[in-house]
Image (tube, rainbow, N blue to C red; front, side, top):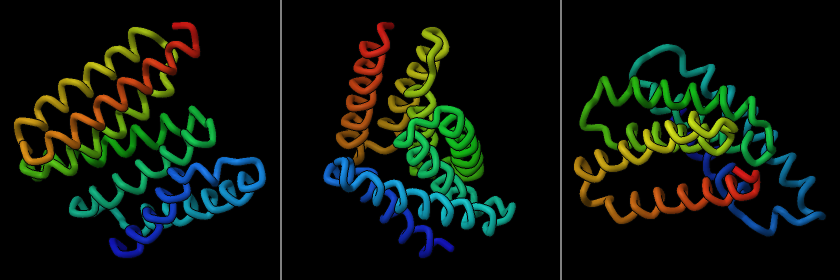
Amino acid sequence: LGQLLDAYDEVATTTLNNPSFRSGEMRQFRDAVLGQSAERLRDIAARSGDDPRDRPLRGLCFLRLSDIALARGDAAAVRWYARRAAEEYEGAAADQPADTASRHGAFLAVMNLARVEDDGPARERLIDRVRTGYAGLAAAAPGAAAANSLHLALFLYDVAVLADARGD
């Protein structure tokens, strides 16, 4: 399942991040690919069962599903998938405290929650959770500090742009 997930994750990530797929004529193709990717990711998550060792796999499935829902503008689905991703990743991190990848996955899921949160104080709590988490992650994984700092800075920029667009 892990290898299958890697393939679907690559397709979904490439489709989400490729600006040429956002244009009018490619939008229908993008939506179809994302729909198929979402279907496959849900299938992999369901097939993984309840084994605690599969938590990171399920976490990645739910994280990508929240990314797809975010791209489609489905805030309710983002909330559901991002919460599930955070739960899976946090469970994996609790089982394996040295697993910084699971901790990072949990922060990415919380970032998606913050991106769709409308309530100012609730969003601020999520943002603070991400800031605090990244500070702890920097101490635990100093080799990834630059990349993590970049992720955090991009997230804070995204949240500021969203707040400005909403007039928060």
